[in-house]
Image (cartoon, rainbow, N blue to C red; front, side):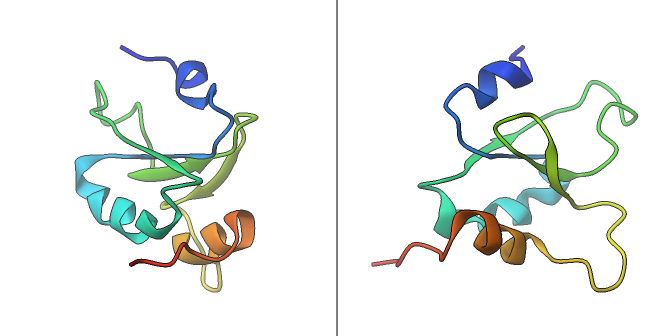
Length: 90
């Protein structure tokens, strides 16, 4: 078992996602040089209320896949706003 603090110790934002939200990891692949990605297996469904969340290095939730209203930014838009333009794929 790994703690959230240990996952954030490198000072990079973190995308935590379940297997059901693995597509979210693919969306942020162009930012992999600036964003850590971890797939988790929650002990129970109530442990992780959203299938994917981005957590800032200070521990605050920056984005969640659950509860996004109309007009709320998607993951790629949040990644661009917080991490800059995606890396060029060669």
